[in-house]
Length: 290
Ligand SMILES: [Zn+2]
Image (cartoon, rainbow, N blue to C red; front, side):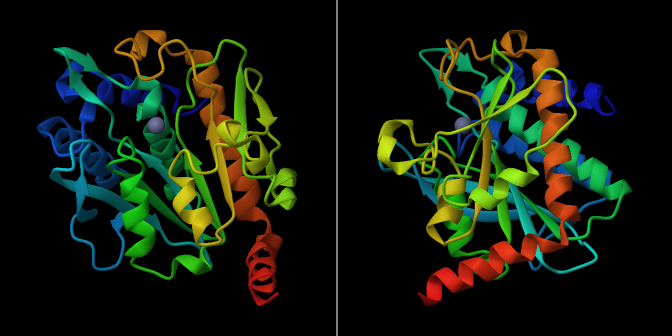
């Protein structure tokens, strides 16, 4: 696949010890931001609205309740229409614990790399919709970055047609990638087609009745969902390296990851090319009125 090298390179870079596990408020997280911003600038993306140098700074609370400086990174590609799709994923991870670096290759260097891959594609082929790329900080602190973003977005979040969130898309022995979000919005199922060999899209993890198994509020799509924005969340089930120091580049499933990123790009394109995707928004307004 086109872009396979940069997908792997991006994960390898972001999950190398240089970035010290990208913990919110640390020098490692700042380095990760520098890397992402450089990639965005070299792809030719712009900062959104009044944001300077792609950054949306905010104050997060760490696990001890201490305030730490955090920064979301927001870029966009204008489409033929100003109707918006927000593609998101957190770039922070757990940092250094007991002198061990938690590199977070799957969680979530993989999602960041796939977002950059999507951005690269649409810089070459203008999208129908305006695509906003939101790289969130403080994902590992109960998704404070997306919480801040939806509360202080540089546009009306309620007008977003769809949030596509990526969090852990590179590590599964069975080639299974979940797409959560169709329980609330079954009409999203029609977009989940792709031509990649090494990835099987699974539905589920989005029914509130199964509570711990329901991922709706377990990554950054939760903040969008709370505002009534339809979402598709792509991620794998927890694995042996989840939130362990062993979540390293060497342990991701490379061919699965490359195909997962390609499948997600095809699905984004299915959504983008569907003129009728606006019906999601109209349906949302209807639901609100009731
Ligand atoms: Zn994560």
